[in-house]
Length: 167
Length: 193
Image 1 (cartoon, helix red, strand yellow):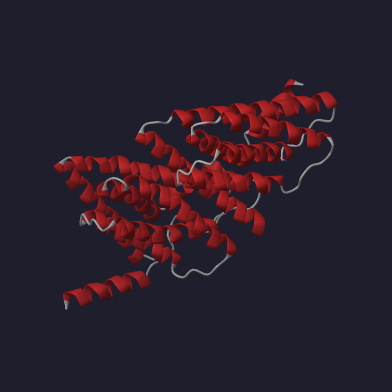
Image 2 (spheres, rainbow over the protein chains, first blue to last red):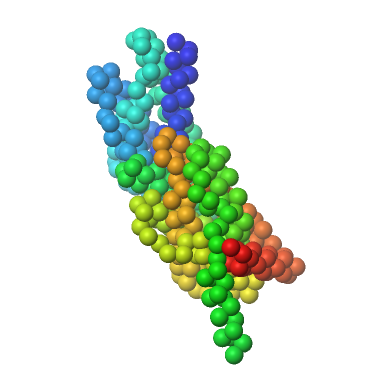
């Protein structure tokens, strides 16, 4: 059980997922009101996990995750906060796609549930920490730092998205 | 007459440029491989530091605008590389970026911000193209691209940190000398195949 949980945590730490979580976290934190996005993200993670239990695995989920990572990074780089509802929709989409892109690798039901719990908890904790840090960035140099990291996320996501779509 | 001779020499150097050491065609994946990639080619490394140095030299808002613009435009160049869109003289463009940016710093050039952004952006396309061509396929692509984008950004920040010395007269001199050294590194890559 513990091993399955740890495997689930590691799934949230995959580079593709990290990019999306960091981009989304910075984007919502930069807007200054991450509360709705946090709830929407958690809801999306649960919806994706439930969809997986019904064997509704969505093959292009990785592309959605990368696409939203690229969009979030671009928005952070140009310092364009989204309206609260749009940001929440973004967060819901990333949460759902992330769960769909992290199918349990356990055979037993308990193992699969532990795996999904690990993914959901790790992804949510990471998202909350990044959003909190970005929301607390008030000094000009801190805001510039957030924008620079946003441009890195966008650049990485755009490159890999192109690679995935073309090869 | 002397200007004509200089121009002829510069063109001859451009035509004689060989491949930059950072872009050897190896396609190994992983975060560390991506992180090391921009550090292994002195011409690429010098140009990245030059972007940060010049940004610091130009002051606000260039000091933060250039490091934000560069990765985004570099990604565009990377997309061209992945798609296989032909781009001539890529390695020459990379070496030239070190020469031009180094000279801008050495000569303390302060063009309007949009000119600086266009110049840096144009060179970013060459750097991105070379990276995009060598982006490994498969699961390591994300880690690899994140690695080289972060390394590039950290080189910019290194340049900015060094460039902050321009607040003092001796520091300004040191930064201009560094610009000259960067231009020399770029010129060496244009001359030596």
